[in-house]
Structures are given as structure tokens and as C-alpha cells.
Image (tube, rainbow, N blue to C red; front, top):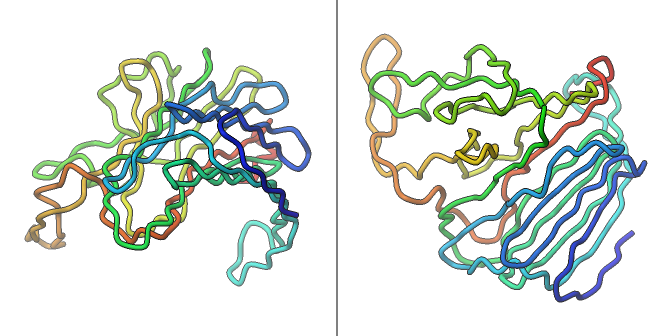
Length: 267
């Protein structure tokens, strides 16, 4: 089912099929996302966005549509579940910049991604993801240990998890996803990403305002082959933008998986 209308600017909300999760999007000078699960604040209003050389960052809402889906997936490769129910409600927002945002809400989480309609190639200067977490939550994440002779984005993604209250995590640390947020009522949220294609992965760090901020590696301009028993190509010079890619595309999903208790986690 698809519902579509024109709108100048407003806060829009979308819920999970069981109404337990509510995600709010606010357009304007900044684009904000917020989320709750059964009254528990998952995200305070948090700035998101994507900045390209081809489009101005106009987050005034031009058009919205909603749709519902309830289908069954039979994965060809063995998964945790033999049958996966693909059940969600989706909000699609087109902004005056012509960039669009898709917000998809399931009963056990939500995700968002940007889309672009540009026919030619585009240059993505930066993606904005500054997640504002509520007070008194715990952070579980693996910090990158910088290797000698390469920048911090070269990692084998094999570091131990750091577990600390969010307000005590050092701003010097860079984490790779997934990371987990623990709430006082035993709620858990895993933050990760999916559907990466021709685009850098998103690392995370706490900035000086204690927002959990996305960090993307710059586009590789020059690489070299490091010799040794296991030769490896490494980036030695990066651009001041993060991607040069086709213009008509969807960008990676930013995913938030939710669970009230560890035993019922679906992730």
C-alpha cells in the first residue's frame, strides 16, 4: 500500500507494524532523526545528512510517501532462521535538494538510507551522522588500534570490546561497527550498516559534545604495496571527499537493531 502527498516542511513519523517503535524525521535547515521504543528514548533528535558537490543541502521536505510490506524470505544460504518475515513500514521523503531519505521500521529495529536521482557521477564530500544518545547508557565497542606505517582506517576489525558509560568514552578513540548501546531497563541497540557499494564504511567516535559521530575514510588517491610475507595494498594519500560514484543510486543503510532483553535478540 502506497500513500503519497506534497508537503512544504514538517516533522514526519513512522512506526513499526506493531506500533512499538516510533521514528521521527524533521526537515529544515538541518535534517534530524529521533526514535523511541515503547517509551524508551533510543535516539534523541540527531543530525543526519549527506553533502555532495552536485546538490545543495536543502532539507526542506518536498514530497513524502509511505508504504507497508509483509512478505516471506527463504534464504538460499542457511541463516539463524530458515524463514524470514520481511515485515515493515517505510517512509520515503524527497527534499527540495532532490536527495531522498528512506526510513524503514521493523518490529525489532529500524534503518535509514539516502538516495540520489542524479544521472551523472557525483562526489560525496561528507556524510553527517551525529547520534545523540540519552543519559546513563552503556557503550560496547571495539576501538581501532593504529598500525605502524598506515592510517587509522587500515584495520583487521579484530580488537576487543571496550565497555564503558558513554560519557566516559575518550574522544580520541575510533570504533568500527557494530557497536552496542545498553539502556538502564536492559534494552539494547546495535548500530551497524549494510549494503555498502562503491562507498567507504562508517566508523564511529564520540565528539567533544558527546555525540556518537560517523567518520568515513577519504577517497583513495594513491596506494602502494607493502612488501613482506603477506603483501598488502595500502592507501598513502586520500582526498578531502569520501566517495566518487554513480549519481543515480541508493547509499548504505544505517541500521539500529533493538531488543528488550538479550535472550530475545534477533541479531
